[in-house]
Image (tube, one colour):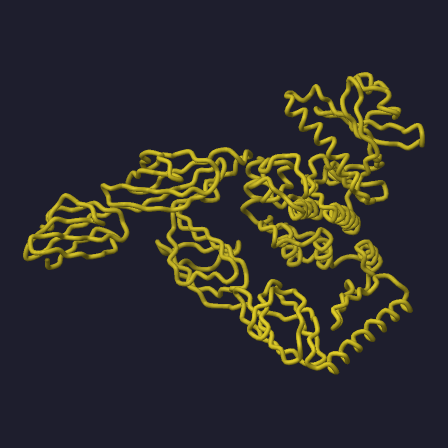
Amino acid sequence: MSDLDNLSLPRMIGRYQVLNLLGSGAMGSVVLAEDPRIKRKVAIKLMKLDAVRTEADQHEYLARFQREAEVSGLLNHPGIVAIYDVGEVEGHGPFLAMEFVAGKPLDGIMKNGPALTLKEKFRIAVGLAEALDHAHAKAIVHRDVKPGNVMVTEDGRPKLMDFGIAKREDASLTQTGTFLGTPSYASPEQIREGTVDNRSDIFSFGVLVFELMSGQSPFPGTSINTILYRIVNEPPVEVQPPVLGMLPEGWRRVFDKVLAKRPEERHQSCTSFVRDLFDSVTELSKEDRREVLNLMGMNGEAPLPEIVSTSFDETVVMPRSEPLKGRLAWIAAVVLVAAIGGAWFMVKGSNRTRLQIKSVPSGARVFVNDLEVGTAPMNQPLSPGDRLRLELKGHRALTYQVKPGEVPPELSLQPIVSEEVLDSAPQGATVVLDEKKLEGVTPLSVQWNQGKHHRLTLTKGNLLFPKDFDPGDVPGGQVFKLMEGTTADTRQEPSLDPHAPGALKLAGGFSVHLRADGRDQGELSPGSKVALPPGTHQLELTNPRHFYKDARAVTVVAGQVATLTVPGLATLTVETFPGIGKVMVDGQDSGIESDGSTGIQVALGRHTITVRGAKGSRTETVEVTGDKGLRFPL
């Protein structure tokens, strides 16, 4: 008990008798104790209130203790460490008594061994997936999924713990926008906005499994800022050499999905992600494969049972693990119901029956006899002869006519593939489409799948143009203007503080007077900066001397400098005949006459030139792309 004496820890915590110290840190200690009433070993987390400097921080840490107890009280799963008791020890602070797990933390196993087999890694992944899905089903988001919060028992079963910063979807104990969690395992939305749901946990779980299987992080870096930048902006790294026993193509496909930047593009559950990943396994014995499949609730011989829908809109789920006799009885029942439903459909003829309408991809707009009724998947009353039409942005419309006794099949929509030209100003830019570098430079012709989300980046030197395209959006012959940006060597990293100010830096040929969101920001010269809070701002830029006026929206990122580019200058000369007059540019007096001897410096772009003389006036609209001379009769 010398450790307890050295750390001034009590020998009794509540009714629990302290046995020995398990670990300690700056914020507290964890001890092994015994409940004398039932002789059960427990792990007790004891917090050091004197280590918390401010009263506000003390309140937050106490709230986390209470939250962990409350959240754990809602959870009852063998893969989650159970909380037995919560209380406070006078002179020492609050404590949590929890299930004692005899084993090792997962981060220690991953760093120091022993080495795990592929089957053992999947056993851990499956157990954690089920634990997280259980929490999500209770509307609880963990928010700090990482190997350090997983204990692995002596028989290889994982236990998820530390729900201290977990969040119930119907309550909040932290302010929106506050970053909580461990940076290396945080989701992009957790870093950017600080707001999360279960899809954020799925991303963090994907990072954990990537590291567990490959031994390396998908977003490596030597600093926290570098890691956060890569999580928000870059795809996961390629694993070289590939993970033994797994198909490289399947690995990339699965992790590109679970680690997608957009939450809606990820797997819908942790279990579905692990099942998807297991399909890429090539080197497991039949016995090991059956064991892992059984852990996932599959029979080891066949895919998951399908849901069978009848024309009565009833659903029969095939049981997963019943004896063959029982399964045959269920199958017979399903066939009988389906047959009765089909016969009833044919006998009734024109009577409407509610049927399931599904589309691939889902979300298609559904029209019945040219009347829009909703989006797929959906149930809809239908009669033989009804004409279905499905429309989805970026896909070809599909029609289907309902036939007597037939349930509409799953309707697959084909994406529209068009030939698009990617062009830039200046030309000769390198093209990266969906994180893949294309051969050639702009102008470049590509096959464009309109049914997918695309990310396009054009670069030439220090000039850059990035753009995301939603399904159905196409370049459409646009010439994308490259602007001064950052390269891989000079790019900025996001601030850890989501409320830190960002800045705008002016680049171009002249100064401008700047207003942001209606507020005067003063004169901004090339190379100078102005600080603005994070978010999207409406800007007004003017320079009467060079006949320049522009309005645009710019997004400022916390801790980053956004480049505000204005065009260059050109010299414009105006000559009229037989007489001369006063030259107006965009309705402003230029101060010169149209004798062709004096040039006007104007911003590149479109301008309206008006010459007013003694015998009348003349107006011309011109596109100024360089020094230009105008000559026309007055």
